[in-house]
Image (cartoon, rainbow, N blue to C red; front, side, top):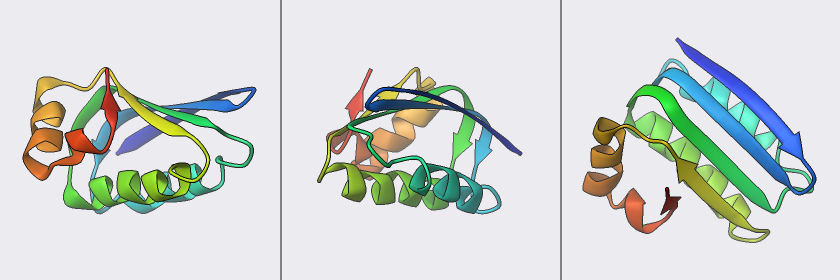
Length: 99
């Protein structure tokens, strides 16, 4: 189960995730992200409620990064130690600004 909350203000969107981002939920997030990036220069993922991320979830981040490379930046905030470890092991920590 994955809960997605979006907060949009001028040029910026914050997407907060709660639950598990895996094969069963990654398509849901991908649709939400893809439909939210018009006129966005800064994409923030708040992962404070994210318990787990799989390779399918990481692919959603990579897809968003490809879009945002042309128009702005992505920031990943409040990731748990477990999620940070996954970002480190996969090299994703080099692709994203992690706060």
